[in-house]
Amino acid sequence: MDWQLIITSLIAGGFGGQLVTLSLTERSASRREFQQWLREERFKTFSELIELVSATAPRSDYDVWPTNIRNLCQKAHILFPTGTAPDDLAEAMEKAFQLARKKKHGEVADHDAWTVAMRDEARILRESLAKVLHSGK
Image (cartoon, rainbow, N blue to C red; front, side):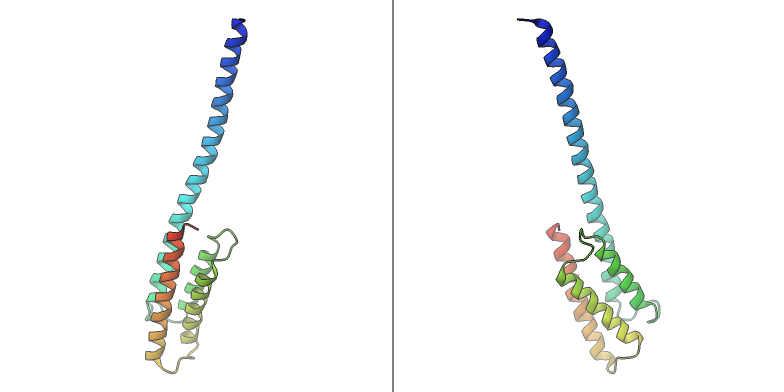
């Protein structure tokens, strides 16, 4: 047996294996870190959104409330690969925004009925947000 050939093969295989392992590990770690960041961003954005929508008497006036809701909805949309939230979540966000917009523009005749409708939409939105968070999508 040629010892030089054996030693060269071991060294080359060892270095090659290490390079492959390092590149795969780096790629895997980057993907894992991105997924963790995405999950944390969704949690923060969803928490802010549900807090804002749940406040049927917002801290700020009704003039900026719908805009703040819309901004958080847009932020939520970009946290999905297609740039759009799943249909049930997108629909829940849109309904909550429309109710807030109606309140801003004085299109609400019965404040008590609007409050009940807004609470119902906040509940539906909360359930949709939780479903997305726990599905891992």
